[in-house]
Image (cartoon, rainbow, N blue to C red; front, side, top):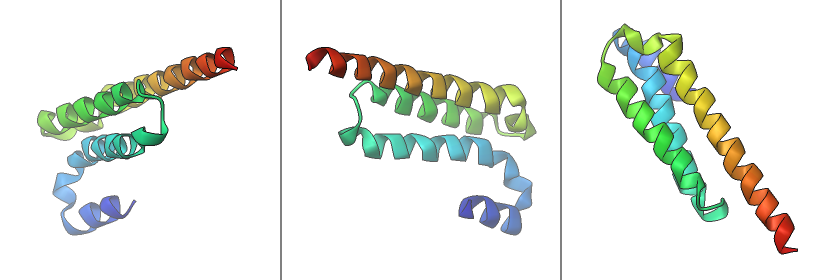
Length: 95
């Protein structure tokens, strides 16, 4: 939230960076938590990193497109849910 406030307050002309920046930050959070998460969660971190960098590479107001913002987050959340669901089932079978 602070990054959003600073970018919009200081340089609003680069607001198109926000969707990609948030995806990259989200990937960093996943990578930093991977020690405590199932190993396949690295795929979700990689997904958010690649889509965030792609969003930044687009380089203009198209970054605010619902397809550019919504699809990566939606698919990433489905990937995270799938990883957690499958790892939960594996943990149940081990007991």
